[in-house]
Length: 525
Image (cartoon, rainbow, N blue to C red):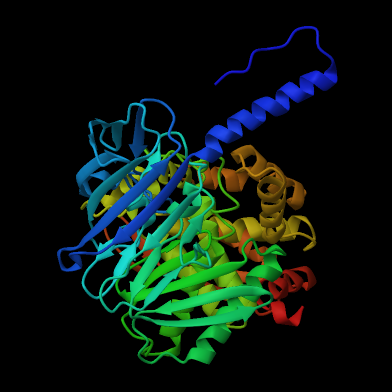
């Protein structure tokens, strides 16, 4: 609705017109409400029943959209194919006409009705961290697979009432819960980033440094509650000490039954476990803590610090960026750094993890055919790529990304005489672009601050990102008094496989020792 432009008016009158226009716009937007009710009539058949109550609609037709992918899981999933029995009614119960206009869009002919009710069922029987999964024992809900938004109205707030099935006692989510039991999300971006786990799982609530936490564990056998929560606190402390800020008031750890993978969210993480907390060894437990740390640090690196192409999201199609190696690869690097600083990982173990990344990258033919930036951009083609030629033609930013993180960190420390590090890059990106400007960073901004803090050009490392050039590991490891074993393990007609094991030099000089201590022995600094 437009407001006519006044002529020959004072500044005060003009301001009044602007305020009036803003109020009219707000009255339209704020008058629109979206409330959902979710129930489970036949969970054994893997269905959820969804009711959407819309009020304050504008116009005679309104389109409702469902996302086709999940942020953090870079693959088109086409969730709308699981929607069945869609129906729209006005507030008197009269059935309204509707039609599909795209694979993910339902257009409802509401006419003069500003209040309507939409119902549909959702089939959910795929087990992954990006998809809803329902059975008679529990329900894992990824909201972007269930809840439609008004086309172009992602910023609208939404409320939800869940009706758990049968004897389900627990609902775990990072979403805000109101006093009446209704859940609330400020907008659909937050809703879509707030998974929900319902069933009879164990729950543990605790406070730490003024923040509230909820831990949901589906398979608690062997869980040493106090020790595990204590280790979670150490991880969060090390992350907070790094970033100097906590961007939430409450956070939820959802740890599901046996499965594979995990996914980061603004207010939570949802991860599968090995089906038990009775770990075969200390190393297996540390592996799991690394995993939890990775998903937690994504709270900063990808949710807040993000390539500018990753937000605001377009949930209807791919969102391309060639900087995912920063989001994912540097997060792998920082899971080891944070675990070191938390006192949960030994320096030699951290070097072994980084050596593993180098071995996985260097000992496949794909390193000669795909650059790191290309692996980021083409992830929409190669996510979970199981083709027989995958290792011959592609690489993973999960492997080369942490390598570049290590080289970049060492280059900044060396160039600045150990006054700056990659930590300072991450804090700058967080404070400048997320906290101050509420946006992602541009590629040139990432490299500009990295070079400024290093006090030297970083063209060679950029080349390692943009091309398939052979990496000179020893050049950068020298900065920290480290060395790499390149002894040959085996050879065939295509590839020489080497050990690529990083070790500490016996007699580093003063500068090398200072950098090595600050990197690997933070408690001694």
